[in-house]
Length: 197
Ligand code: OGA
Ligand code: NI
Image (tube, protein in one colour):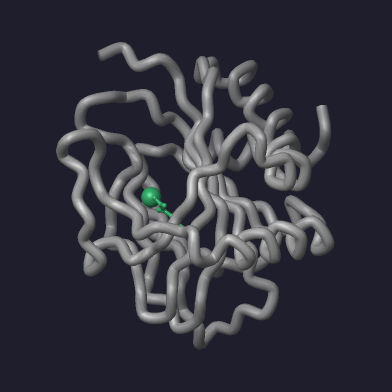
């Protein structure tokens, strides 16, 4: 198996999350960032919860999103196709039964955050693995906007949203996005199985 995939699997197994730099090339990252910026005005304020319980509360979650469609070849070719071998390996090694995924572009405008939460919903256990690919080439420490992951058996981990960096974590792990002091771009996704309830 590919060395990178091996390493991601080993981290995920040991800690419940993996942080991988340069998962995609700077060239691919700049193509994706340009595409998201071009779509800027079409991004919509993100909600919390699902179905009838869905709400918009910018003080809890301040990002703007757009779901990626199958026809969006730019995202498929420059990113999503590269995730496939990783998910295949997860299924083989960890028997996760992942058979679907959903992904959206995300922009956190300056001054926004996402409070501590888990990515699973109350009425379904379909979401198994969460993924975030960051697309911020000139990110500074002073921009904040870190992802904080709270693993089950160890101290919290702080992840800067640096371009080309891929984070995968168990969707049941609590996490938050600290307030961002610059526009923060990413692609967020969820790998899902058939829900048993
Ligand atoms: C989310 C989320 C983390 C990030 O969209 O549910 O937690 O770093 N995103 O953007
Ligand atoms: Ni989340």
